[in-house]
Length: 336
Image (cartoon, rainbow, N blue to C red; front, side, top):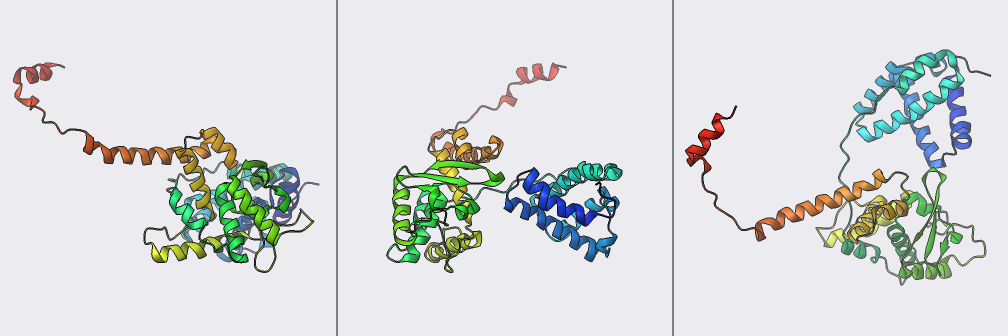
């Protein structure tokens, strides 16, 4: 049965609990991101606009309201990237709602026509090979916590996985004999990546000491409460050892998070001459244009190196003053 104009809340419920998970097969994390957008939108409606939610209908879900919501987000210091993500979620809902309440098709289509704001991507933050080596080898292997933490940091870098992909790993997802890691990534996609045999050996030792159980469907990585490790837990581990290093090394970056490991792996692969197409597949990018940000960053570094090197090898030359050649100057001036 088609929804009427007052069923805004009902449409959102169906959108999050049926359409996204079962018709679009979106991952749990993606759905939670959409949910957060609507939580902000409801807050905007009820607190800022002072409209009771049961009074807000699909007829009110129009271009003017969404544009005002985006301005409200910017006033709360939301970045351009974050604002665009919120808009994308609302436009996706508008597309769904257009098929469910035909009487308001015009207003929801006006939402879909809102353009995303342009923004300049931030600089890629990554660590050098020596910095990565220093960080992942910081945990002490002589105690159980150190072994677990080094396994987390090493896998995060060597597999190039996202933090959530790391947290999703179960024991059966690691083939230590073949040095393969099976990742479950964004969009409910799966991919298999190769890691070094040193990494496989480390993980094998960790499993034998701390996860030697028969049920291979159990989580690979646990927190101190013996529950599956979370993204916050991953960043806590990173920050713990990064802070230890930065206390004695002023040059070490002070803002390291899980995605820096992924950026670092991509940049190191590129520097090693690995084809950008393979790097795309390794990282699990759907579009190679996403992977090209690393190539652009690499070209920028090369250009900076060339510019710094040029004065050292290029001899300075004194050119004659061409303005003194009056005959040539007169000829050039005569051309119309």
